[in-house]
Length: 148
Image (cartoon, rainbow, N blue to C red; front, side, top):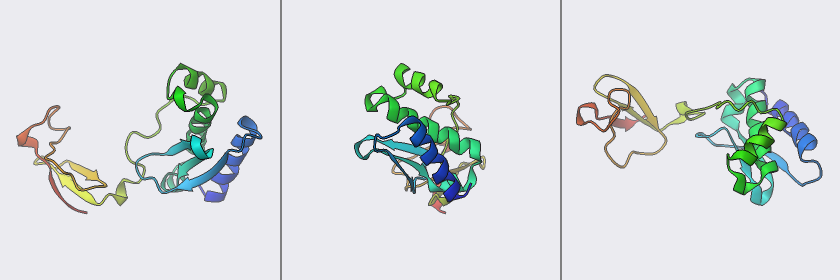
């Protein structure tokens, strides 16, 4: 989606659900999450990387997720109060992104002996084994890391 379209959508949702409360919208450079609600500065942000590759409904759901956080308050987390607010404004409740939103920007690439690839944004500080090959730590499934 184009940034101006995301901005218009975000501003419309803020006007509809948080009118006159001083909330604003911005993009951020997040590579591990889709969006965020910053209560201290009353700002909702969406990853610029996500916005560039997601379709309109995905971006809308991320925005609704964050608006629900603004409505429910910081202490609500993802508890019953937040879930009720989210459902009331049209959030479907589906998890949109399980992994990083900009995985191709990861700076470390790892490969296990079976050839499964793993990416990290920071250099791993300890030995890691492949979760595909073994559910528990296994020396037989150690990941070899190199700069991407």
